[in-house]
Length: 295
Ligand code: KIV
Image (cartoon, rainbow, N blue to C red; front, side, top):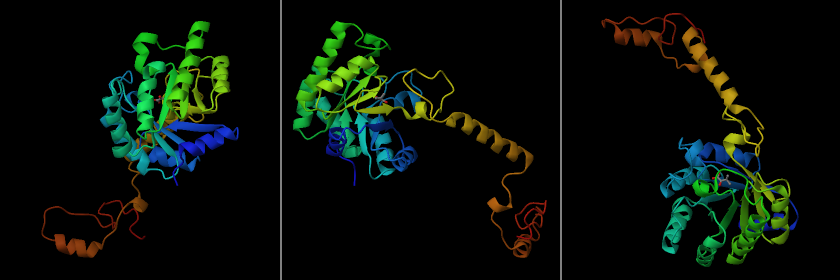
């Protein structure tokens, strides 16, 4: 059974913190599910970590649908949330169309959109139409050219506006709100003032849950680790070491070995090929070193 927004509301009501992690394909969604993570985000961060863009702006609804379908196929229980990309919810008609595609074609159970009071009307329309909506406040990457890549809500006026935005999203029917790059005391105050859960990233420990990007927490990049994240593994380094070992064994002729190779009847092969120019060896594997001939 898939986790529902009500299940998350129940966790929140019981005071239990929960985790959301981004996952953009079948294999990572399977791993997230094995780890017991209840929420998967097919975020538009895929533009950077999967597609190599330098921002989320080029991401399309097609991209989200493509990756969401793979992630949804990879897991049975997590609730999969899909981002509505840049400029796909500027009008109500666009928002409904994008949400329909992300949910009906991508298989997501909720969409996420960035913004506060300016998108509250859209949130209301989507929720009325039956679309579960996760909000996103603080640093909203789709507005990075306006607000800059920095902590938001540091001055008290901006902090007040962020609280008002959060309340507006809740009133509009959002079931949860991501708080990205927000000072911890502000995230605590927002969380205390809302009935719906907040999900922090770079927002301190007082949110209802935490979201992190797959590649950050698993250490898939060797670049600078942002302050808001922590490497719980160094899979990037491990992958490089494993690939170096593979290349070394291939170059040394040590891989593939007999256990990786298919056998056949040598005599039948020789008989069939008799008279052809090419001569094969007699190791049972079609090679000449005899490896595995007895197995
Ligand atoms: O796209 C994304 O990964 C996100 C998270 C950072 C919340 O929006």
